[in-house]
Length: 241
Ligand SMILES: NC(=O)c1ccc[n+]([C@@H]2O[C@H](COP(=O)([O-])OP(=O)(O)OC[C@H]3O[C@@H](n4cnc5c(N)ncnc54)[C@H](OP(=O)(O)O)[C@@H]3O)[C@@H](O)[C@H]2O)c1
Image (cartoon, rainbow, N blue to C red; front, side):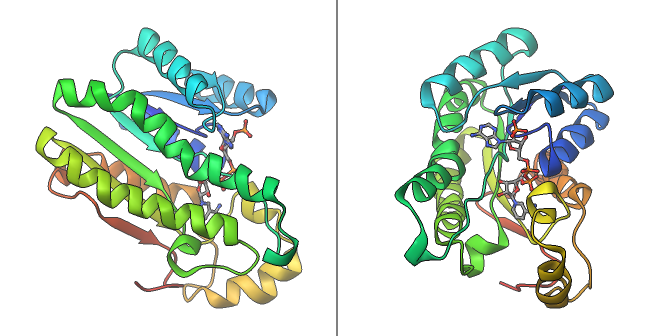
C-alpha cells in the first residue's frame, strides 16, 4: 500500500508510533512536528521518514507545509491529525493564553490541516482522515477544561465532516486514547500516575503508543471503507461510552 500519509506531530510519542506503523505497512509517510528539531532529527535518522516543521495552529503555515509534502511525496491521501498539547490548570487559574494555545492547536489545528488536503481528496474521490482525540474529550477532566473542550470539539468535527466526505469516498474517524505512556503522560508526577491514574485503568497499566497506531492502521485501510464518523476508544476500559 503506497498511499501518501501525513501524520501531524508524527516525530514523537503516539505520532511517532503511527508514522512507523504505517511506514512498516508500506505507506509513504511524512511526519510533521512543531519545533523540537533534535527529536525530529533523531526520529528521521532512525526511521528514514521525512520530517517537516510547521505549526498546525497556523493556517497559512499548514498550507505551505502541505504543498511541500505534496511536492516531495505526491497528493496526500491519508491525514492523521495527531499533533496536540496540554496546558493544564484549574479553571479559576487558567489564563486566556492557556485556553487559546490548546484550542488553536488541538481543535483549530484540525481545520487548518484538513482544509488544505480536502480539495485533493475530493478530486481523487478517495481520502482517509483520522483525528486523535482523547478519553478526556469524552468524559471531561478537571484541570483540563481547555483540553477537554478541544478534544470534544474534535469528535464533533469528525462526525460532521464524515457526513460531507461520504459521497466522495472520504472517511473521517477518531481515536480516543486513554492514558498512553508518552512524554505527555510521563510528565505527570510518578506518585499521581501510580496512585491516582493507573488504579482507574481496569487493565492495570498505561497503554502503548503502538496500540493507538494499530487503531489508525485499521481505520485507514481498505477494510474500513464502511466506517466513517466513528470513534475507537483505546483506554484499557477506563471509560466505556
Ligand atoms: N499520551 C496520552 O496519554 C494521550 C492520551 C489521549 C490523547 N492523546 C493525544 O494524542 C496526541 C499525541 O500525544 P502524545 O502524548 O504522543 O504527545 P507528545 O509525545 O507530546 O508529542 C506531540 C507531538 O506533536 C507535535 N506538536 C505539538 N504541537 C504542535 C503544533 N502546534 N504543530 C505541529 N506539531 C505539534 C510535537 O512536535 P515537537 O516534537 O516539535 O514538539 C510532537 O511531535 C495528542 O493529540 C494528544 O492530545 C495523548
